[in-house]
Every structure is written in structure tokens, then in C-alpha cells.
Image (cartoon, each protein chain N blue to C red):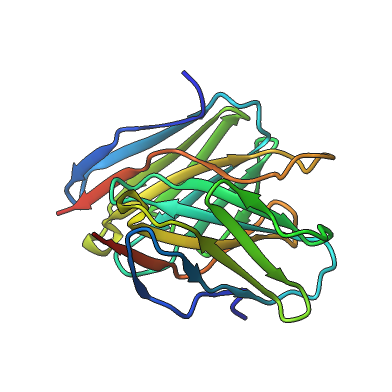
Length: 114
Length: 116
């Protein structure tokens, strides 16, 4: 069964505007971690933000925030004030179970327009 | 060097060649991974090693042979590959979950493989 679902293959956003990338997950475990990664065209995977299943507050890292809705099993990434350098593929991922296994979504390609 | 280093960054090989991809992590992590990323496909987990022991083999064809001599090094030996094996191969490492740690995957820059 698919663990991570990203329903938006591609997104466009105007520079300086905010954008939300959707992610839903499936698990029966109580303890898990949710991650977002950015992959520019060069190929490297860059860790952006983390949300633990027991964290009560939404995670934030600079212009990135994670809208965590546990009951709905969603972990959407919000990028505020988009920049041209934000154009990339974005992957949502979940850790566990087992704890050393990571499940990735199919990704969302974000294009930031000037 | 810091982080996760992969060599070579680019590799072109024929179907009868034997080559190897190398991954080295300088983060003191105890788990290492190989992922395959083909065009327009999600990341595919290939292998997981935990404390040098293989804990996951995701039904990978035997023409891919991993080797993990220690917790810092991971190899992917390639032989008699097919053109459909052309992809970006990503190595990653992670640490055991500890209090205050997120336990995320740290990726290398990838080895882009082309099989002719």
C-alpha cells in the first residue's frame, strides 16, 4: 500500500507569493516522522523540514512551514515568499516503521515564475 | 570532507561492463541506503544496511550487488546492466533516532548512470 501520496505532479507560483504543496500519508503506527526534501535539477536531495508525530506545534524553518493535521494524516509544505531558486522537485517522506525505512512520495515539481 | 560523498558523479557503461559506485559518509551514521531515481518515477529504495548488515533488499535484480564493508562505506557493484537501469543512483545515511534528533536521511549528490 502506498504510504505517501503527493497529488500535485506540477505547480506554478508567482515569485514572492506563498504556495502549499500537498502530502498525505498512511500509517497505523503512533510514532513516525515526516520530512520534506527539495531536489534541484542538479540532483542532490536537500532536507528542508521535519515534523514528529508527537509534536504539537507545526514545524517551521525560515520560509518553510509544515501544516501538520494528524487526524487527516496530512503534512503539507508551505513556502512563503517564493523565490526563483525555489524551482525544484519537492518530495514528502515518512520514516518508519521500521524506523530505518523511509517512504517517499512521487514528488511535486514547483516552478516559480518571475 | 563532510556529509555524504558519491563517486563517480557520472558513469557511462556498456551492457557487458562491470563497474562500481562508491558512497562514503563522514557523519558517524549507522545506516546507509541505496535509492534509484528514474525519470518521472518516485525514488525506489534498493538496499538498506544497518551497522553493516543488510536489512532491506527491495527485490533488486542480482545484476546489482551491494557491499558494505563498514558503517562509513557503501558500494554498488554493477554488471551486465540493461538500458532501463539508466538512472540517478542516490546514496544516503541516517542515524538512530535519539532524543532531540530528527533522524533524517542525508543524501549524496548522486551518481548518474547511463547504460548503452
